[in-house]
Image 1 (cartoon, rainbow, N blue to C red):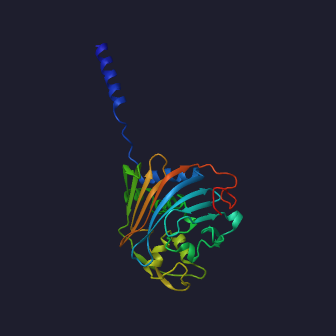
Image 2: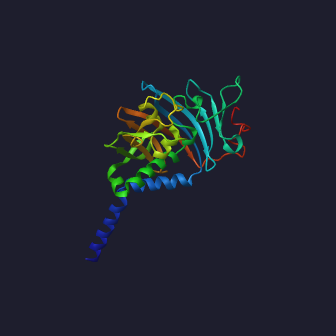
Image 3: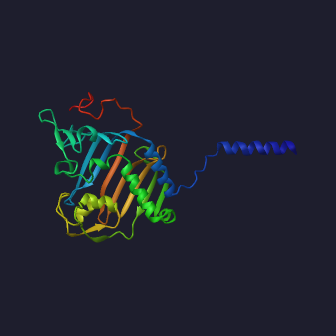
Length: 287
């Protein structure tokens, strides 16, 4: 009898070792917490970003590609454009050294330019400014929605899929579709801008401009009544790397379809930077 029980025990152990571990069910709120912890701990990044953003006209998309280095928490940024028409252009943002402007190297025959992150040149065909670079911005948006709805409601609202392959990585896929997405009237107060309203309400600045046919992020809106989206997007799809808990793919849709999409590849976490990086003196740059 003892011999029989011993054989059964060994057989059970053998099956346990060979059987794949069943992954616990991940909830959306738990995943957002993991993402927040991961992006709070990681200070330095290097990555390539591929973008697709709907044009202000609504006809077609601006497709871009860039190499990026980001140093936190000082938020120093180096970016090199890898796609035409501005291929080779370098952008440097270091507030402690160069103030609130971006230093732009547009080519050897053109002197370096100091441009506002909010100006027409820097915002041309762009949905976001350099201030939204990196991973923290999108994670903070998800945290905002989670907090606003509460964990129980958010976990029902956000659909989680596991073992999705995106860009060669095993990912969770978060899908959120807002059935109540709409545009609401808003009277602009003194001193408010499109950017400040979008950040305060946690909505898309692009959608405000596009929906109200303002034509520009610099449009005069003070005192006017405009319509702003009730949430950032009607549908959001986020791919989260299961090893690093960082969002590496983001797609946002409105009532007309996809209006912006981002993919992060070749990500280096806790990247090592030289002491003179994020300055014009860095030999790795062309300033």
